[in-house]
Length: 275
Image (cartoon, rainbow, N blue to C red; front, side, top):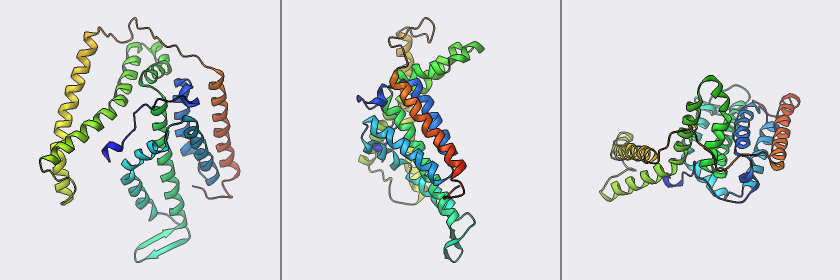
């Protein structure tokens, strides 16, 4: 399961989504996450699903890469389903002993699971279609108004920290897989035994991983200092961002979907399933 985590990776392709301005992609991703939770009935949530499916289709990123990310959050989905399935009022659909499942709890569980799925995959779509360098520059551009508050260096530092964190997710996943395989070769058992034994078995993995992460961060800091890296002071960019016609079209299509969600919430809230 560890090696199936692809969040944070960049998938190189020549697609419409890849060519969009990274600043626009970040803004639209944030708005998409907001409207996922604004959608409170079946029609509006379906519109958000169609909006995301359209992005996946245009991005030319294999669907299996999105599905790999879902393996890591299956426990979260199961917990969400169980926690919400037995809580709620409405018409009783199933009843056994103290277990009561109502139609409202089914709708609530379905909505929450769909929201979590789109939330995770929307974030993955952003990293799949935007290179780390473009992501850093875009975040810095979007946070540039903070410079008027005297936070000029903090803006670049924050953007760099976020990008480095995303960049090293695949590296840490690979490192974890290597440590687990090495421990298995030494006879470690991560699957059998009680929950306490499984947690104790993770200690020989977490400690080397922590040491390796600190060492890697230290080496990265030294490499940046050796190259006279000094943050945003006197820094220029090889690639300049410019909004194009495709950016305008993408923005307008997104606005249409977001406006449709609001309209659906107003006019279909009493007609279809809602929560």
